[in-house]
Amino acid sequence: MIDPEDLAAFQAAVADIEPLPPVNRVQLNKPQRRAPRATPPAPDHKPVRRKPRPEALPAHWSQPADPDKPPVVLDPVQAEFPAAMSGVQPLPPPNLVLHGTRPPPPRPLQHLADERAALHESLHGHIGLQDRLEGGDEPHYLRAGLAQTVLRDLRRGRWVIQDEIDLHGLNREEARAALATFLAAALRNGVRCVRIIHGKGIGSPGKEAVLRRLVRGWLMQKIETLAYCQAKPQDGGEGAVIVLLRTQRKP
View 1: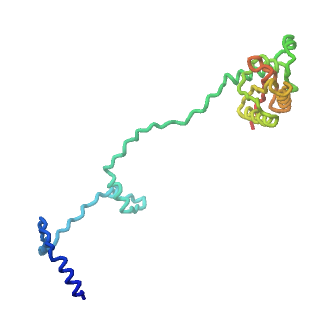
View 2 (view 1 turned 90 degrees about the horizontal axis):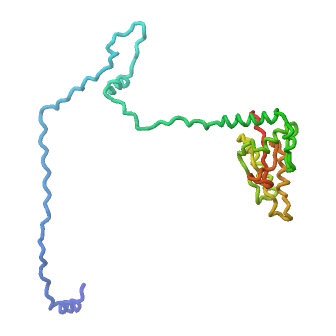
View 3 (view 1 turned 120 degrees about the vertical axis):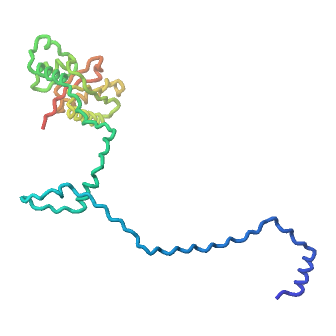
C-alpha cells in the first residue's frame, strides 16, 4: 500500500509538469500472417512410370557358345563395365621430362695407365750410374724389396701429388691421429702420392723440428708407405715429405 502522504507529495511535485509532445513517428501495424495455400486435390489418374532403357550387352554374349569350352558365368556388374567405358578417352601424357639414371663418374684411364707404367719402370728398370749418384743427403725411405728406381721417380716428381695434409699447430697425439686417418682415407680412395706438411720447426722450442722427426718415423711404421722423400723447394722443401702409398688390395 502507498502511504497517502507520499502520494500527495508526489502529485504536488508533478502537478506543473507538462507531457512531451508526440514524436514524429509512424506507427506500423504488425503484418498479418497469410493463410497457407490449400493443396489442390490429386488427380484421379495414376502417374506414368518410365520403362528402364535396355542396357547394352557385351558382344561376346550374343556369340554362340563353344561346346568344347565350359560356359563362363560373368558377374552382371563386370558385364556392364565395358559398355560404360566404351566412349572414354585416355588422358594425354603429362608434360614431364623423364631423366635417366645418372651416369657413373669417368675413370681416369690415362692417369691410371701412367701410374702403372711408372711403377713398372721403377721396379724393373735399369739402374745407371746417374741414378746411383742422384741420392742426396736428405732423409728418405724405401721399403725393403723395392728397386731404387721407385725412390728415384718419386724424387724427380714423376708421381703426381693427389692429396695433402697440413699438421701445423698439432701436438704429438693430434698429429699422429690425423696422419693415421688421412692415410687410411687415401688408401680407401685409391690415392697413390700425397704430401705431408710437418713444418721446419722454426716456431718450436729450441728451433728443433720435433714433428718432422716424428712424422718420418710414423711413416716408416705404416704398412701403407712404400717410399718417401723430402719435398722439392716449390713443394715445401724441408717442411714437407712426398709419400708413395701402396694400392688397396681388392677383397
